[in-house]
Length: 243
Ligand SMILES: [Fe+2]
Ligand SMILES: [Fe+2]
Image 1 (cartoon, protein in one colour):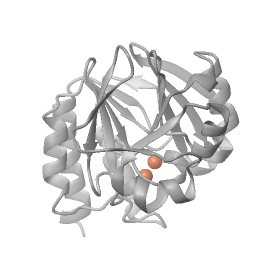
Image 2 (image 1 turned 90 degrees about the horizontal axis):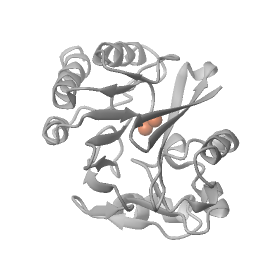
Image 3 (image 1 turned 90 degrees about the vertical axis):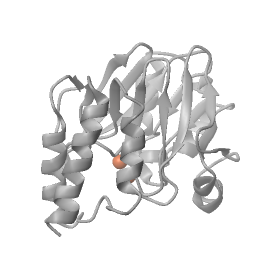
Image 4 (image 1 turned 60 degrees about the vertical axis):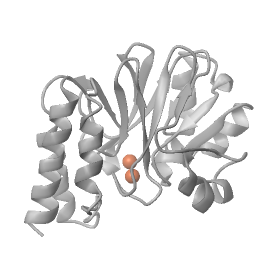
């Protein structure tokens, strides 16, 4: 039920489909000298994610744990990971660290990253982008792996259902459909559209990512600049024009 796919060299998508939510929850493991896990998943996913990681590298060697914002699917199992991996340090925005992470979920103090700050895991280099309210939450940030142009994009490009691990076909149509469906149910207003949304998405598009590693749904491989521009239009259409 948990599926592992290499979506870029040394970047593994560990995906667990949760039928009651009709959602995949994807973690991304970067195999390098200092292994990095992006998103821990919820606490209840910890055993299956740990076992999946163990097929790729010793889970206790995880050095960095990144995530976008303070939600259970992003960092719920952080404490479990830090109990297992003695050097595992959370990396997130100063807002995330100060407002929630250190007090609520971290076993050890998180390392805050400034906007634009780079961390190296060995072969790979990650740029931290502070993206308040994109995809959502004040403390939001994203990581961009610069050598292979992989954007770890959290809830951006969210697609419902048990979809294929990776695709070169358009995923914005499915993202748009998710937004429309969510607007009609208890999860309405999932993503905000603020005066920060368009400039932030333009900044992400300008990175020209080759791989868009989304937390829910298929990873997109292709023209990431175009895909983010399309995503921005879909958000505007559904969240502004129709509201
Ligand atoms: Fe989220
Ligand atoms: Fe999420």
